[in-house]
Image (cartoon, rainbow, N blue to C red; front, side, top):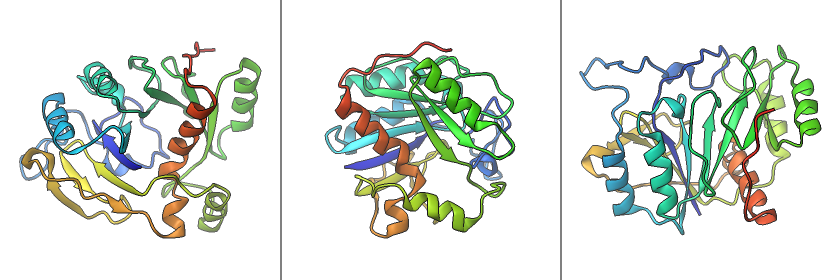
Length: 245
């Protein structure tokens, strides 16, 4: 199974200091020095490329951002992917409407100093040492809300690299063989760690997913939520939406 990380928009309505995408988050109408917009993707080009190169029996899709709820065509994107048989997750802060489908789980991050997500199917709790994340865990367990726990990452993380690697090592090796990143400007990247882009979706470039071979790749945080998702589907083939607490 392959994984497409689809950053549909690299803008956000939150400004969390610890965001791992902060360096690559821009105002919605941002234009780069070469005159190209930071947020160029449309459903027209996305479905044209997906229909040409991907297969729902081979690819899972993670819709992320920025905040996907800001993407103007998010409803049509989610419903269109579901109708084509794709499954995956949507990483969101849960503050903006994103449609519920049986094929995509909306993972709503409960951020530091922000209200409990409104639009979600499961909650992401970030282990931020400046936040009472244990209290958030207790809340979700009391309400019977599905949740994931993610250690805070990025340059502002209070956790040492050794601590992060030790936490990664507790996770099972991923089910995914390859991954591919697609950003809102239309450029592809085989892995976010390489920071090397290739080609553009607007040129209908064929996907070149990165082969996951090393131990670090096999336990990469990029896959934790997706692997947990597979287990949830195996346990319950019809995951029901949960109401906000």
